[in-house]
Image (cartoon, rainbow, N blue to C red):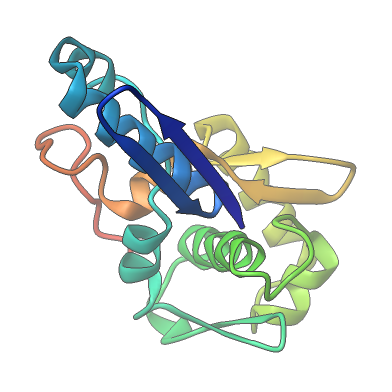
Length: 168
C-alpha cells in the first residue's frame, strides 16, 4: 500500500492504494488540474487492474495461488497461456501469489491436455508477438501489451485497440 500526499497552497490531495492505482489517480488529477497534460494521457498506458480483472474473470479463477482456466476445451493453447499469465499477474498484484511470472512446468500442471513442447512452442510465438515476456530461463509473464489486449485497450479508444475475440 502506497500513500502519496500533495500539499498545495489552496488544496491538499492524497492518494492511497497500489502503485498502479496511485499512478493512475495521480495522472487523472494532474490532467484535471493541468488540462494540457491530457495530451500525455493519450499516449501513456498504465495497466488498470480492475479492468483486467473484469475482462478475465469469466475465463480464470484464482485459488490458493493456483490459476484455474475455465472452459478450457473452447480455448486455443495461445489463449489458455495468456489467461493463465494474466491470472498470475493479477494474483501477484492482489498479494495472492509471490511472483507475477510462471515457469513452463507450472503451466503444464495448470493446463490440461497440452504437452510441454506445445506450451514451449506457443510461448515462442507469444514472445514474438510481444504479448508475453521471457524472464529467466523457462519463466514467463504477460507483457503490458498482453494486458492491454486482454483489457480491451485504453478506455474511450476504439478501433485498433478493440478487444479481440479470445474464446475461440
